[in-house]
Image (cartoon, rainbow, N blue to C red; front, side):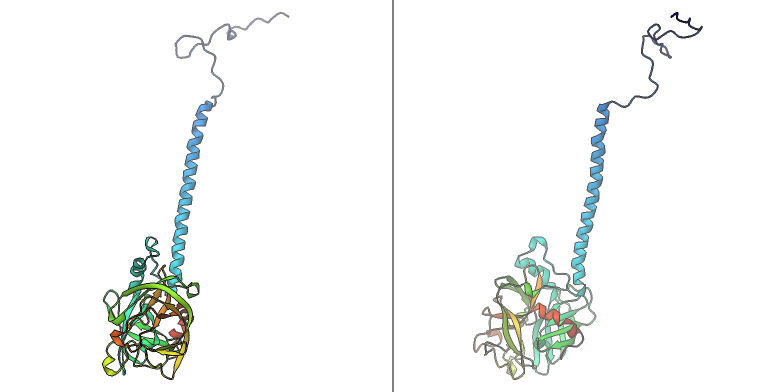
Length: 338
């Protein structure tokens, strides 16, 4: 077939006429493509790690924020548990399991109580359970009191009112007048206590405020019997010249210790400890190594014939389990049985 002649002005085929650069310059070059080519594969591969790292960083930040929020919720849960009056005395992580850590955390929540009654003046201890000044102590510390003064670990003193008493459990609730912002104790669970557990006791033996002793749980569920009556033998500092024994009498195993308990008495299950307790420790705290109150110290054995300051601890002390306290707290707030 005969080829048709080219029209005037048509360009020759590329192989016949090289492409001329539009802005000058020489040399032949293929004509530019009709669309932009994709970036080289090497460049695409270089971008992927950068994008991946950015995505990972965003996810990590989100996870980190979530972890912080979760930790805050955990802390908030602990605080909420203390809303009923059990916050403030957790031992720091670095000091857990040490007597010094427990003492530092809990001492601000332990008070000295001085009660005046017709029988004389008595000294005991107490445990702050709310920031506005509710304090748990023994009934025998404030029984029959016409005036109650409370000294805090920072040296401040308050007047207190007896809110409720439960002679059957040897417990009492008092409330400071005009107090706020106090450090309340963390109440534990005495059902979790085991024989051999390490414990710390804090109280005001012989008026020595904030005294710390330590030991172990020697036994559980001891049937301790104490008097329910106002008794001149309660933890007394000034009554020895008036014939008081300076000890709170109790019975165990059918035998009397530290004097006569009288005719009106009550028996409760107690935690036995070898942590040193002395006159004035009554109403103070028995504490586990996490800084939680597991008992309210209430009785101690003294050698026969010893009284007052001559009656030193021989490692036989007793505490009311904190679960007993928690079970009767609302009743005490309503006035108790006294």
